[in-house]
Amino acid sequence: MGTVLTIVIIAVVLLAAAAVFVLYQRRRSSELQQRFGPEYERTLEESGDRRSAERELRGRQRRVSRLEITPLSRESARTYRAEWAKVQQSFVDRPAGAVADADRLVLRMMRESGYPVDEFEQRADDVSVDHPDVAMHYREAHRIAVAHARGDADTEDLRQAVTAYRHLVDALLDDSENRTTTKEQA
Image (cartoon, rainbow, N blue to C red; front, side, top):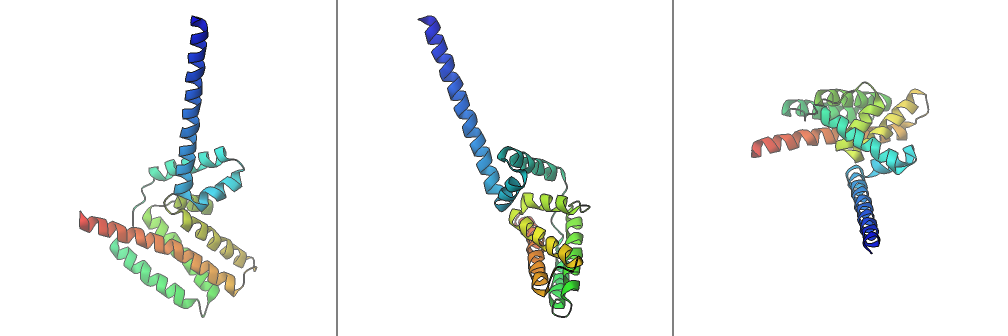
């Protein structure tokens, strides 16, 4: 009877451990889905399986946590806000130029904030950690800019690119405003 009882206890402990492990995995998946939103789905679709996608997203979080990303200073934010207004106004007369200007402005803002800007996909992945919805727009803007360089984008596409870039500009400016507000409250 003692051997049977021992086997039953071991089986129950193993089942309980397996249940705890499954619940832990589900919780981690749920947290990643909530944090990354549409970026979780995009990464899952790209990788083909949940485990790889989640490993990729956790890797992004680790990478970005090692970067020194800081919100823009109040002065820089004011300057960039004015530049962004000019970019939007220029769209009427020179849509392609506005897209190119928006891309350059975003790069400067990201560089000043501490994002590495050498390669587009890495930039978009890095942005996705703190701004997953914005990363989707940034990818769309970049896709249209590349299509335009090939001659495959019309004025409506260019308008959509400027609108998509605006999401990232707004996020970086909002980070700056939130920093200023937090400092003033401290």
